[in-house]
Image (cartoon, rainbow, N blue to C red; front, side, top):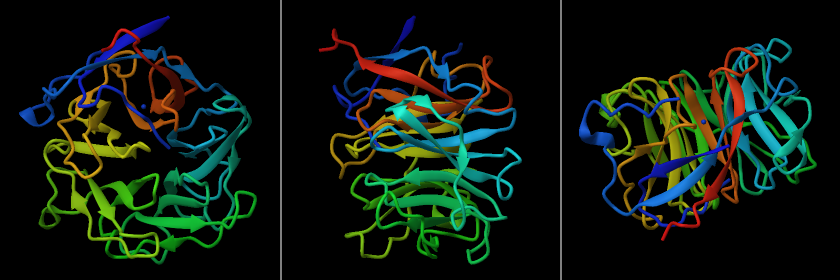
Length: 317
């Protein structure tokens, strides 16, 4: 049985990329519903990925590959290499029939913590966060590359002091062209933060250039509370993330073109958001599936990976 969700956005059609209550109203007008345009979408009831994938421990930060056959995520399960580790499951057909999780081997994982994986559009770059030596403070953002999708990952490279700070930096999301990097950070007020954990973007002119100093995404997205886990879609004009206004819920924002400012963010409605924690969204490249994390009933324990189908309402004009 499918549930209809009304989401107010700036676009009449969303082209996607690369988590039993209506979200509470924010404490300020920062995240009020946008007055620009309306579109109606249908989210099917979420389905737990099952006991083959999920464990009694915590799973988080899913990121789906462009072809829909590889899902990276992080987990606290004990048979990894350290604390949080990055894991991978493979599907027999895109988005379905998932196999057993396998830990991503060194040098991506280490005896330190690794989390927040993001696989690039071509599958040749894996962005993630780690508190391993060689960083600039807390968790830093790193990238590992490989020559082909059949090759092993090479030694990860820290993205450097332009992107990373001495504070917590995590949950990278790379744009389809590889020129914009979205992430969350706890860097302090001198860097322009609005709350305890804000969303930022760093850009570069070409993939051979250095990343710019990150820009805070501003009060239409960030609040005095906590924002996590941005997911930029392949159109560059739609972004999902989660925000802790009262609970952790999934929100979205849009813009008319990739050079515009983001519109005021809006929360997803049930069945996506509930009275439980719903977080870490990742949307398939064709926009038909959302992956996310929740501790709602029906899971295997702790936080589990879930998915839901997305369809466009044919009656939307």
